[in-house]
Image (cartoon, rainbow, N blue to C red):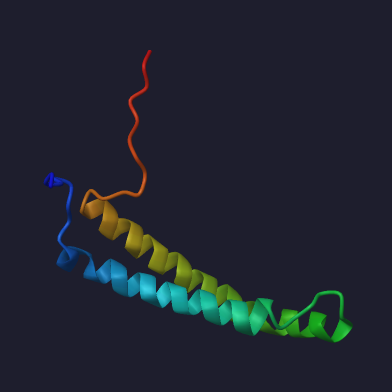
Length: 89
């Protein structure tokens, strides 16, 4: 088996894993308790959408911070999900 020199020890990515877990929870909660609950074609739901908007805007700010932390952890460990391709000229 060939050794992968790009391997990052899992202990180095614990903070990213914790942030990812938190982000997944917030996304699930928003999906179930906001997007799946309301239909903008119903007048009563329109009021609920407006009522819940500021709470969900705050949750999106939290997601933004979590995603930044995850991205930062991967960058610090020189890890990416994108492959680098050489472009021939």
